[in-house]
Length: 421
Image (cartoon, rainbow, N blue to C red; front, top):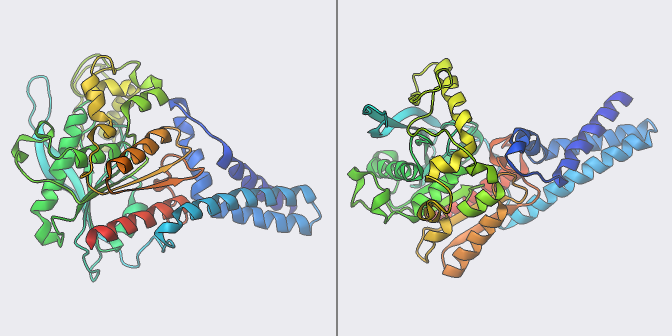
């Protein structure tokens, strides 16, 4: 019993201490999971501390009892602080609905051209469609979601069930978009894909129970950045796919989690983002041959093909701003202005909800605070939830028990309920 008490006290104390540790820079990306766990499982660490304190006291081991109490206090104060900032949005409700949603995978919502050197063929843009369970009344709200990616990595449907299920349980329809990434396209192509997804949802609104006036863009990390730009630049014809020219693609709102909203501050926060990149243009270069191109794998690709593609992406991601924007701020100032959300702020931008942790190692929280202030000064409808002692990616881990994820979900519920009115 004393061994168990010591173990629980150590675990509680270690993860409780991590609430107070700040990291930054790309070298710490591999530690991201460790940094997410203190917040996501704070109730577990607090319970471990409580049990350790009780067992230590019962076995007359004061150091073990003290360690358990310190771990309990550290995680307890974290949960209290998160609850305090989330209080205006109401008390969080259980995250998992009783009935499972209806999910249709790999819908083709748009077709573009694959940029092969010798001339590319059709390039489908895929999405997963999430519908409320049978018997759940539709709210009329449609949500287009763009996954986190660093503009290079990941795919739709990765670690998002915990976020999607509670949203769809409210009667909302959700379209999870697998937008193109670098180096296949640049920022303009990603924004065009997001707008194409809005157009698809408009075109299918009647059959899905969506009010075309109540479509919302959303995203996590880089996906949130693209969502904001797409929502704020619907009047920019140069960002549209040609077949969507002249269409009214205005959205009813946009919400983001941990979005990098300022290109200059992002580069200041992570200077290595501009250092280097594969010198040849086009698609990712093949890790087996060191030559272009390696075509993005579709849904039917084998696991080996997908692993090969991911390796190619990882090899190039160190210079991502060159692929995303075409160069540094002195070389392409117009692209840095386009990528900075503040550039597009005006009083009539769609209602906006910004959510971020204040210990984000990848995305500078300073930029989100500045955007929030800029939107307020402009007279735009904006709400900002800043989660204390919380790291990047908090919305993707152990959502049903995670205090920061539950706080974010409650803010999103509140935001979407206002859209549906």
